[in-house]
Amino acid sequence: MSKQESEGANIDFESKSNHNGNVKIAPNDQSFLTILDDIKSSKSPAVINYGASWCGVCSQILPAFQKLSKNFSKLKFVYADIDECPETTRHIRYTPTFQFYRDGEKVDEMYGAGEERLHDRLWLHS
Image (cartoon, rainbow, N blue to C red; front, side):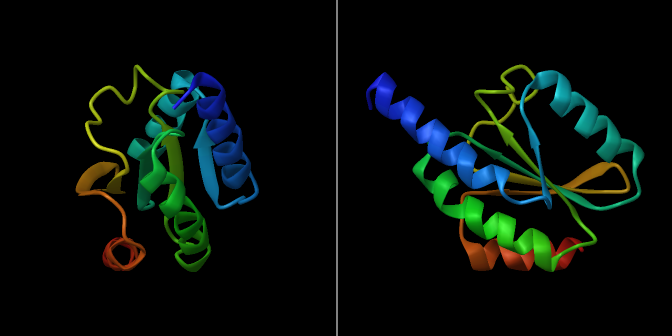
């Protein structure tokens, strides 16, 4: 993929991400650290979707993630792009990766996509 195609994919990916108020988007490492601190100090359950603008599977599951955020209102939904948050996401080896938090602790992790699988995990952790 050329740089221009990659940048075009990023713009398209971001436009899909920004029209849903139920998903917090971490635009950079500092913002993501603040979101993580909030999750770790909160009793509310949360899910973090780690993806990348160049990842086709990530782009396919993102609309479902947004839609599911409306159905599971007790969960906090967060999206972090590994290229926009390189320091805080360096432990992520696969995209998409979903991490689930309860009482400030990571309790589960899911690799890959699949709307039904994601729905079932969200149901389990809500």
